[in-house]
Image (cartoon, rainbow, N blue to C red; front, side, top):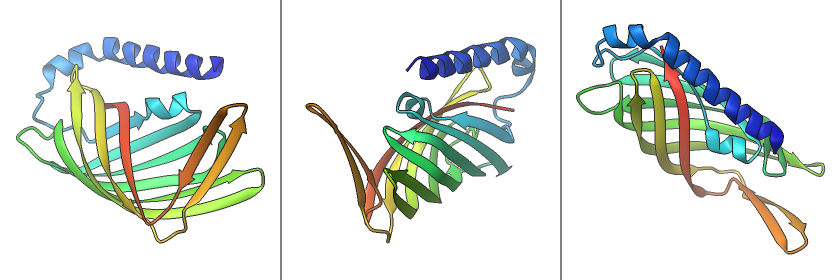
Amino acid sequence: MQRRLFIILFLLLGITFLAAQNQTIINSKPLNKPYKHTLTTDPLSLVFGMGNVGYEYRFIKRASLSASAYFGKMLFVDMENSYAAFLRYYKGYDPTYGLFFQTGYSHLEASYKGEKAKVSSIHAGLGYRFLKSGIFTFDLGGGVSFSSDEKVEYEKRSGNVTQTVTLGGPVAASLTLSAGFSF
C-alpha cells in the first residue's frame, strides 16, 4: 500500500512540475490545434495494484491511434502479457478535447496459483476527454467488449472477505479513467 501511495504522489508531483515548466508554451499555443502525442496512465488501476502506461498518436486532426500496456497485479492475479490498441475519432469543434468514439483490440494473460488464462477481445465504446491547463488530459470512457474466449473467474477468500476477478466471457461492460499530458 505504501508503494502505491508513493507512485501516485510521484506521478502527481511530476505532472505539477511539467505544468510549471510549460506555462509559457501553453499560453502561446492555440487550443484548436491538436497535440500529436499523449502519454497516459490509469490512476484507478494503481489503487488495485496494476500499472498502466499508454501512448496516443493523433495522425489526423480528429483521429488517433493509441496503445497501452498493463503490468503488475489486478487485485491478487498476476498480469503477465497484457496490451491494447485502439482507434479513436473525436467529435466536435475543438479536437483537443470532447466526445470521442473508439474501437479496438485487447489481449490479456493472467495467472493465479499456477492457473493461467488468456483472453482476447474487441471493444467498442465512447468517452469524453477533458483538457486542463492546455496539456493535461483526463479521459472518462466506457464500452462493451466482445470475446470468443471462455469466461474465467479467480476467487480469493480471506476470512469473511471474498475477492473475485473475472476475465473474458462473451460480452463485458467496461469503464475506464485515464490521466496524462499532451505534447
